[in-house]
Length: 165
Ligand code: RP5
Image 1 (cartoon, rainbow, N blue to C red):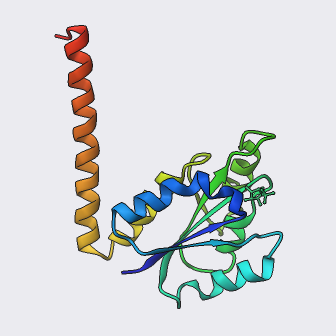
Image 2: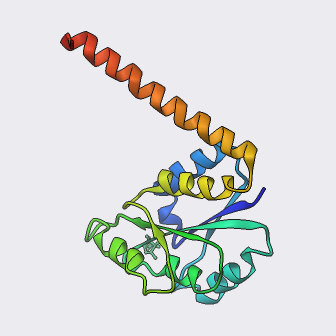
């Protein structure tokens, strides 16, 4: 199975990205986590992206805050799909990173999820990898069914409390 790379601009992004690691683990998708910065370690970041396909990765998740160019820098150096996760920071609540990540020029896409949307980034990566992995597609369908069942349970509990018809 293709692996997923989770690249963070800083180790200070680790806590916000925990949901991605949890989701990939739950879906039994192999992954690595690296700290590589578009600004502080540009050569290492580019080298990782250039080698990622040959190294067995199928999707790159790139998380960065502030003037967040990491996802774009990854996309510029690979033909693998790149998912950008804008990190919420102390100054502009992540709006800076959201705009920096999502506003890619035509011809160089980055699939951008919500600010701090680590879990959705991993789920989207899983959906991409599942296109060529039937066993993963089945696990993903089960995950979705379990999620629906949980919501139905909550609906039933709320209905019971408030006497819905
Ligand atoms: C970005 O700057 C990182 O992705 C992080 O979200 C932000 C702050 O980094 P640190 O100063 O905490 O290392 O590059």
